[in-house]
Image 1: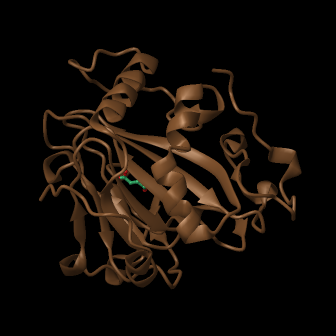
Image 2 (image 1 turned 180 degrees about the horizontal axis):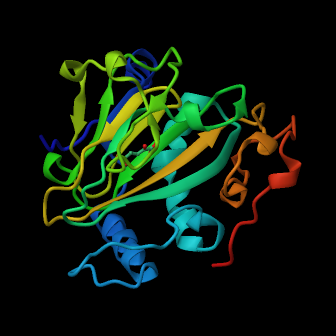
Length: 254
Ligand SMILES: O=C(O)CCC(=O)C(=O)O
């Protein structure tokens, strides 16, 4: 069900591992960023189709994406979750064009991320509509305190090769986070989450941005794959420990 959203709740975030949806962006802002997304992938928003473009780390190259990643609604919630010293370290567009048959398996993000200690908060922003029919984000409340070993998903319809084992999942507890444009959900590094395929004609255009605190060290030698996606930006407060000097990001020109 689409709701008008409620304010970010730190109590819910701590107890259930997520909070939202909250109306973080105005409709005008959501529409502007939605249009920018389609401009960059060089498609008409009226004829959305698959893209082979890399959908990560646009905030390193596009000022508008950096501005979106550091939107005041996101910073306000991150301060409550992580404190005054905030490091933005990654972002990704989660785009599912109409009739995309890939699903995102139930997973905990921390399974894929060598960072020490394991501290992260994600803001997941729906720039268009996210509903059951186009594979909205789903979470399982209360799963955010323990780490569970992941296993092979064994199917190429899964967007990731690894996910949580079936026996760890209680689907009856899953919450479908249906969202209208500009709504945001927040979750932590261990909250079980995933999404079904897009069975509709409605593209699902969402943006997630990851924050941590300066005490966290990124173990780049263990990261594998494309390490250029990870760059640290001090967005608020101070970075006294200075543990990630080698991967400091540069804010793109306006
Ligand atoms: O967009 C989705 O369905 C999944 C998003 C996700 O896995 C994430 O933001 O960590």
